[in-house]
Length: 342
Image 1: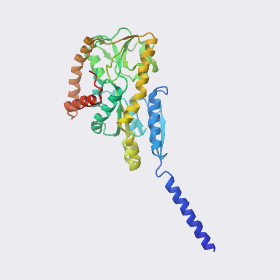
Image 2 (image 1 turned 90 degrees about the vertical axis):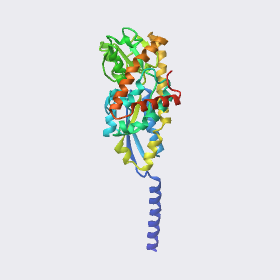
Image 3 (image 1 turned 180 degrees about the horizontal axis):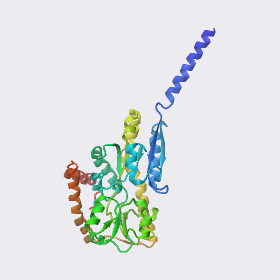
Image 4 (image 1 turned 135 degrees about the vertical axis):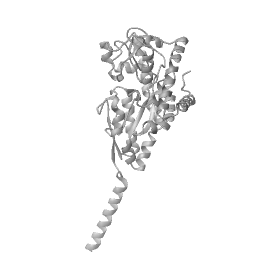
């Protein structure tokens, strides 16, 4: 009888253990997401939501931790943070490391991307082919853009490239830096979140950036003249630590892959685009002098862009790529999404 009871207990225990093994996470692991924008910026919420969706998709098997506002490092270090495993996924503006990834800087060409959502789809499709070559030490997720960068200045409006002469300007990327220098200006490199103090101290006379970002980062106080035109587009890449991704189970890699799509790029771009566009109304209420470009002024920017494209092609070819092909594919991708500025 005792033997029979012990057998029954053992069988019951085995059933409980089997049930627990079936329902418990098969391979729980942590996943650290880091970014550098302040909590009030919509990207902070979008990136947190992106991470949360990965956790939910995994049924709690992937435990997400989000480190906002540069807690793990400054904006310019976020690629290397993903590369070296300080974080598992980060949010990177390639323009903060000028010259490091020249292919991505094509998005910075003046008057090129007209629509952030279509542009984000185009950029993700286009760059996925080249990310493995240009960013081989991370796992590429997606690229997105948002409301176009434009020019903000203190002393005088910068309406055409010739107006850069004698001005100290903060560019958002390498392409913009080249145009500033080619037209007699001086570049002062810094991340956009650090622009307030240099503007107030007179270290710079102008900056490229986004409308609401200027307000959030404290630069609107000194700025007086603002161009309203899609002068340039920054782009953001989500890199994932390669060792982390490769070490995941096939199931967990699939979950990550499902959150590294063009749909996710648009989802990331839309809230911040709406946020940035609302900045125009706020800047108008602050009494800033906002101007649009005439057709002649647009033509001047396009003419000044030709040497930039030639320099870009030379640099990309030097790195062993086919610049003409890459450029043609870029334009075709934008056209396919109705996102090419005409």
